[in-house]
Image 1 (tube, rainbow, N blue to C red):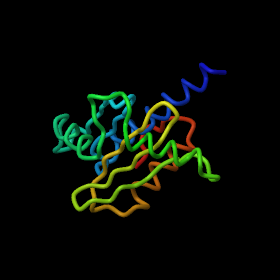
Image 2 (tube, helix red, strand yellow):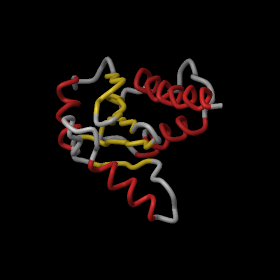
Image 3 (cartoon, rainbow, N blue to C red):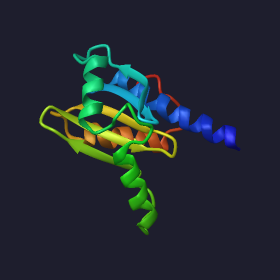
Image 4 (tube, rainbow, N blue to C red):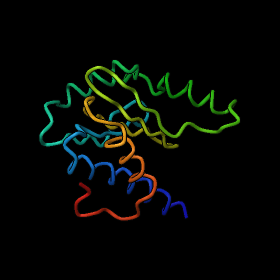
Length: 141
């Protein structure tokens, strides 16, 4: 059972990675595990690079020099006090970019999205695909 859940979590990341390959509005996807960027995938047509992703992560308050992410620690403490349970995802809206953060027990998945898109064309599709789909489609869009 444990192996299946790990496989499922990796498969969900692979689904998001697949979306980066087929959706022009998704610029990049990566995970943060123990305040470290892992599994970075940048879309071929994207104008951002890994240095830009590093700047975004630092700007969001993830300090790579420690093993504890302050934002995640606060969210986890609040979730323990909250009758609603753990936070599953959140959308950050900026002038230049939209960021979808999907919280898993062992990592946070970040999806960087063009800001000039409608939510139902990006975030809704990503979340629906992430939580509901079982198989990788050949082409989503």
